[in-house]
Length: 204
Length: 204
DNA sequence: GCTATCATGTTTACACTGCTAACATTAAAT
DNA sequence: ATTTAATGTTAGCAGTGTAAACATGATAGC
Image 1: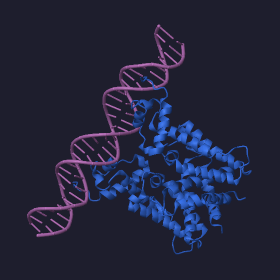
Image 2: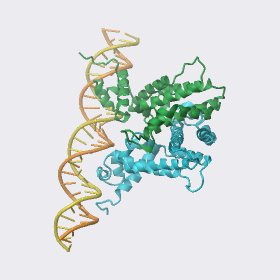
Image 3: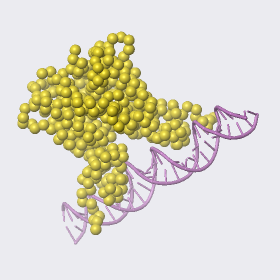
Image 4: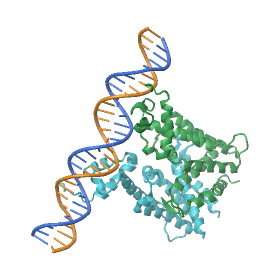
């Protein structure tokens, strides 16, 4: 028999939302379907999420936690350029393998991160991780470190976006534009590529 | 007196959609409100756009045409690294000044470009423009040119995305994450920055 | 000029959405 | 034990994308 109170609804909704969001994209996610999935009335989720955007923010928060983990480097050992390349590769892999969640994290679905403290915290933490790695690579000023950090982030963020839009040639798949083999860019050149860009950036 | 047939509905809908999309973001755009705006019945737009995605595709097509124009370099004169930096800066300026349209062009609102020939054509044309510029910079193989092209595109695309999310410090505005002054990155360093990255990329 | 055709418009309707207000139940605090 | 606050339900509003059936009028062939 089912009790009137669910007991763990908020977490279940978040988990379910993460799953559905990644499977179908956040636009296909509805509060009502989510409620139905959890065997609860249409409006029950509103006891835990003020608006749909609040739910989005929760999913995005989970996303940043996962991204942060994927890009984490053991803090003790010395950081090398190779480590940063690895971070970049891991970032891109995350973005491509969790494309729908990534959209939610970096799109406009959640307007202002500052309105969602947990989201802001998890996003900042991801940034702080990368910043720390750069700070352990060379003794630069805070501005230079931030600059390098934004540059690497932009590079990998851009690659995630473009690689998803670029047309695949010599494959069943055809979508987007630009007659280049995504496979060849990713598999063959990605690491070299990041290395090259980073070399130009940190010049040593 | 108003005639039964509008006469120029399709173009008017597209123009109106472009305007509203850029003003409020494509998620706020509804076919019904668009129809009302043009003084026509709710379902009239369906005579010109099979689905809402088809309308999105039209708006995105216009966007790519504008982006292509913004990144165009006179084909006759010799291309230098400086020209490519300029292209990159213009690209970023477009992305930041037309942020909502840019979302539509590079987000997931339009799933498969191949389903919309005009969109595919305009996107490919934008790519082809940039490719041509690179081909006039050095005599590289097609693969190398494509590789460089994707790299620059990724870089500027990434910057558009990240600069929009990064938190502005020392300003009224606060949104996103990362304690860095967007203003300083953009205004002070953007050109230098692109130059540095391009130097690492084309190594000459 | 007359008529058939077809592009383009309207009306109506359905299923779905986010969200609010009023009410019900039960866990937790006094 | 009683009050209170958290968490659930029901009913309903306004808005959405889209399909089906029908209306109008521009145009092409006779």
